[in-house]
Image 1 (spheres, rainbow, N blue to C red):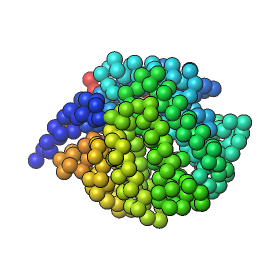
Image 2: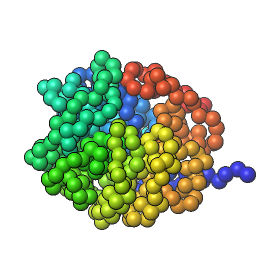
Image 3: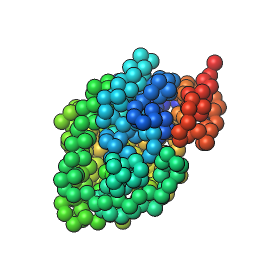
Length: 362
């Protein structure tokens, strides 16, 4: 029996925005910003324009400051040149009938001294080095030892989020996604493996939630709640992170985010890029705790996306790697035809090859 996939292509009202379908282009780091300025360029404009048939595009993670950068050639949103570059992207997406949110990002300890202002150490809730590597000008290198943030420095970073949110408005975005997943700074505060603080930002769950909520509240002074979402990954071990009891962290967090009326939560279910089922977590319960929309993410196919929507386990489905190789992914899913095979060698850095030259259906 052929599966009725019409729900995947039905309109959906997200906050106060009408989306033309329920597919979301997930944030995808591609390391193709302009060398030297980290500003989006004409190649980036074409890449996003090609994918404007998605119900919603969430941009690649975009650093709110130089300190927030963890990989070479990722775009920022803290200089006039970067704002101007993103304005060209949003104009192109809107001209093609699309909607686009920017994902605001601070990597925290997932960085290297060569990327930091004046070669300083990366920052983190606690001075705990991550086990892993990052991509810098010379290739892949070990992550650097971080220094623990002072309370004053934490407040300053919240101010950087505000400035980035203001710049996102200037750049013409439709909304904001707060990156609080995948082992980066906000999640480093949330989880007890990376947060060993004994002040008001550490220890109890209430204290560990504080930074995430302060960032959210600060952005809500710039953007209406209907235009703000947040990305979370309760159990993913990506970037050497974990928590001894994630349910005790994420259910209170979602309750507080729901009370603030955010447009959506965007969940990386399971371990990023690996599996949605291991380790197990009560995503259905989390969805019921939140009053807004639920975007499900991590390895969804056409069939599993339709199944999740039909069962009301999600409102929208985010696709990552399929959007890399298929600029016309929505139409391919609609017709139920084969997808292009992604070239993993061109995922990070490079030129148009493996970026804007994947064929669309004729």
